[in-house]
Image 1 (cartoon, one colour):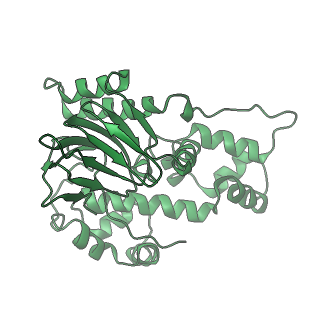
Image 2 (cartoon, rainbow, N blue to C red):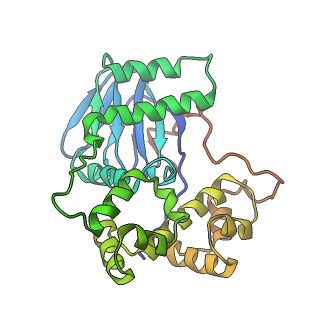
Length: 307
């Protein structure tokens, strides 16, 4: 599998940034982000085009969006908030088919993917959510996640085409993948999927690779490693327990697969990315990020998203 190094970025969490006049913020990210200007004026700038930004403007930035937010030279600067959504960490909610739709949408040459004026319903709704002090963080997170999906409109609709004539293994597999959360693949055996599609193991292997883009074993490993990243970053349980909770039968195999994918051992990854998660209390803390706004004022005239 392709080796990929990455930081463990805020997920389902809101961050606040403040730029001085002419200050600039730019980022590339593995997360989708809802970004709303909270005060001041500025511009979204990229090599193709630029958009003027005013207070209340809402942008949807994909994982492939390239550009920067630049504060106007006039005035007192610009502030904005980001709500990050890392889709690979929503495998208990999204199906593989839905994840594939998001991936294809991110590949479309749009930067930002969507930009909405302050008077739009979605922009007004995010303002209301941020300014509602009477709701719990959990409730606000769920509402922001629902707003994130709502902003896409009809783009996320998966058109189910009823097959004509006999239903084959591909049709059965596609139907299963469109109706089942991706995380369920961690709990279903290869033989069970073979029975579900009604074909031989060899034929199913070819069908799965054709539909998903990789082998069943590789997809299984990918989902297990993603689960391991969540546990390493979001809890303080021991690495051996992370291995067991992620579905790896042994610590040695977990270490081997993790290092093969990320080029570093699980323990070292946690030490580098999450230095606070080095003790092992009896109960792990929640994986989900906090919604408390963290103010970040960049030194000088430029700010970048922390890796």
